[in-house]
Amino acid sequence: MGIATSNALRRLFACSLALLPPGIAMAWQQAQPARPAASAATIDNARQQAAQFQQSVRAQQTRDQLRKTQAEQQLHQNAAIALRRPDAAGTAVPDQTEQAEQARNALYRARQQDLVDKYQDAVAPPVRARPRTQPAPAHSGG
Image (tube, rainbow, N blue to C red):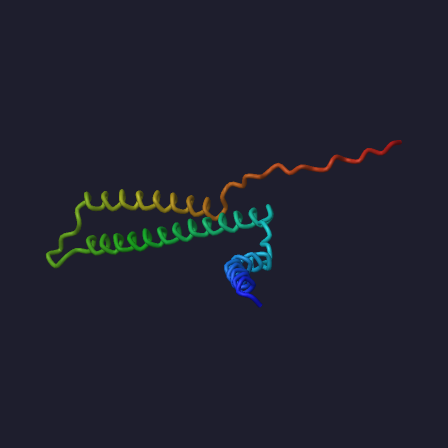
């Protein structure tokens, strides 16, 4: 072999080494399986799951708020009972305190009713029915 042939082989070898990484990368990409696109049913299912999750979160938040206000009301009632008892001097709570307690109880009942309404809306929100297309009825040719 001559020097010219040796140089040509070196150049050919260098070019093949330079083209090897892109060739490997292309072959690897072609070997990867194609991922299927999400179907409409999968998207609808995901939306329904997200809506159910949000609904359960709202219901849990409302239940927590209901429990909190019930505990607060219990504390107020215990304080009012303690105030109604005569103290060591034998004096009872004036009528003004009792009226304030009645107003607080009315406010409590209104808040509780509001929370119950919110809970019911969160648990069973109004149904928005989608119109479904019905197949046309088959007519008999009689």
